[in-house]
Length: 66
Image (cartoon, rainbow, N blue to C red):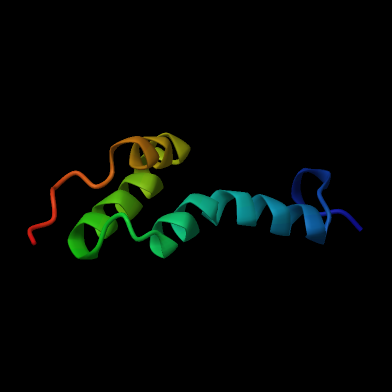
């Protein structure tokens, strides 16, 4: 039995996984911490995969103080 757009349950799970993949990758990343990570995740929700590509290229935005 199909669901929306003719996809079965597996298809819907696959689409959901692909949608959430950038958020999962940022949450597991050690490049950023705290507020900066939250900003990147919010950008993902507003601009989707484009923000994740920018994250991979630009993060971390601020330098860590040692």
